[in-house]
Image (cartoon, rainbow, N blue to C red):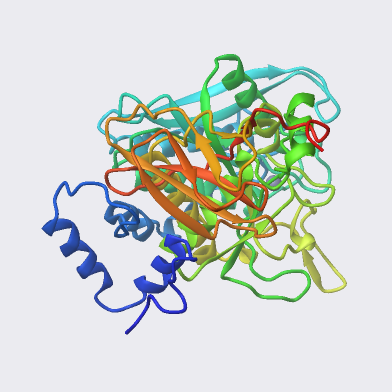
Length: 484
Ligand SMILES: [Zn+2]
């Protein structure tokens, strides 16, 4: 069968072809043989790599039954409102906190000491949804990377374990929060359980935060601490409301997950805005590159799932735990189910006119939550295995030319193989073209003008793992008035 014909012409990116090819019988075997036959083969232009067997193993090990058990357990605490009791061992957010801590500790047992677990607590002063000073605790499991040059590079995946009924300040009412957000929390704990056994170059942080319904308090605290410490948080995923597949609109969709990413960075400076006004880039923030990466990898490793990129920070009038990260200059995205049912979010549990309201376990689609966890896990694994995205990527603008001159800093990783230039039409949502250029730190794309397409640069290691793309900033004149 000819798979390189209409689908895999050189105008398509690698992963699009990979998805197609991976459906063919014998693909994995053939790919393995290629790798065995050519140990340590030198980096080649446009060499296609096999699926990473470890990542495929992680995807396979994620278990919907664990996720269901954990969601039901979280619901069993009655309420997890941030203002609920923290001293009762059976009810309230304190009981949920301690149970999550013990689950992460169990996961860490299989990590040969690489995973550490902590309760990150602080006292939140009175604020709009906090009537009296309240301790807020994030439960944080850190799986340390094994590569010296990469272990300071951090990927955070999070869900919020607090819940609410109709009122965010009611700490007494039942607030099962099965979907919002026991679903995201359980997905994160299951990822920790599976991934703790594997080694990655970079560090992965699995986190359950509190105070989300009180204005993103727990995630704000973590992000602010990270910023103050100068931590290199390369990407953050929040999983919030990832369990319902029957929308209030009547649409049943078990195969789609939405990934929200902002275009213009929340942290953009006036100087950066001036550059963007001049040459574009409103569709090329680090978070948007992350969303493109997630779509490629997620659909490549979990082919029955579709990643729908939504090019906005979040839904209308809504927010999530990725926002405090964005505001501090970290790339971050939000995962959410495709069609929400608002009868089952932030509602007092009740039946009215024959309609059941409340965020109950019976409305959660557990195999679907597992699939969203698989999309997350494949991406975290690939990000933490791949080299850092190239730094300080610039497009030289000093000479007027129909060629494009790109330049970047050399990566530090010992297993780096080289770099890849990607590009797309300025109106295209995803990278459509790529060219491997070897282990160099500058490259001229002949006959392709920077005026007509967008460029990016990715780094690749010797196993063929690719970083997300870095979008170049112009070096030289950019102001529209510079040259008429
Ligand atoms: Zn939520």
